[in-house]
Image 1 (spheres, helix red, strand yellow):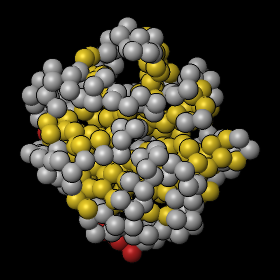
Image 2 (cartoon, helix red, strand yellow):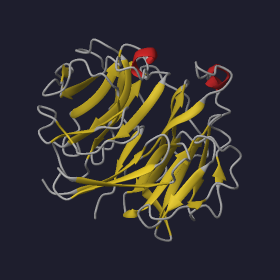
Image 3 (spheres, rainbow, N blue to C red):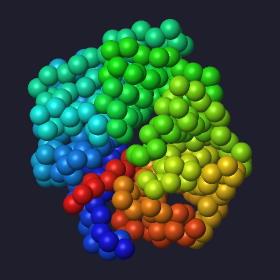
Image 4 (cartoon, rainbow, N blue to C red):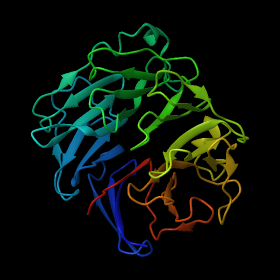
Length: 338
């Protein structure tokens, strides 16, 4: 296959992974010892990358990770579990950057951090009194941010533990969680062309919306475990999507080789099916990040908790390991268009 570039948040640094043929890889590290938790690449500029850290705020690179600038000085909170860059919202040629923090807040900059917008209506939602994060029950956080693929005013936010919140006016106001979606929200995807389709992976299962998040339906048939973490959807087929799952948090986040993880695939109305291929059954380490490549239908990557990256070129029927061994892996994103 043709080459590609990935960026990974390792829990300590940002790793840039380059391969010319999907086999031999080179890895370059940056932001080392910064406890990097999340990473996102500008869909319009593969050199523009944003990274969030555990307690040191948010950083921006405009040269593909060669150098970084701290851009979060004005933000109220430094713990940054989620970042995103919008495909639809641009100002003066720059895609908007979103940052989610602990406690649950959302911020946006449209000028690379010179100024920031806060969205106070999000933490004022009626359900916010019930939000909590079980390991630290006195707090909660913005676990995931998904800007709509084509409408700059629609934003989805996953609160752990609170649910999926939606804004239809660029963040000025917010809709509270809806029946059918789950509260322990871990990841949210929007299909890049069938943009009415929204998908959620959560601690209680999987949910899908066919109307841009106005209503949700639980979708779990065929799965034997329901603590879901990673989710991805094929760019060419909104009915082809993937989720990773385990039996619960104490399995999924274990570092003792007993994650009891699995990757599942769903095609259309059929139940989820287990993707064994050449993988262990079950997986010893949790697939923390599932990623499809923008212009390559049928290609799916799985970033594993212990730092391996798995690649399938046939929609998960078979898998192979990329030649990388990171110190850990929390999130993957693609630098498309190189």
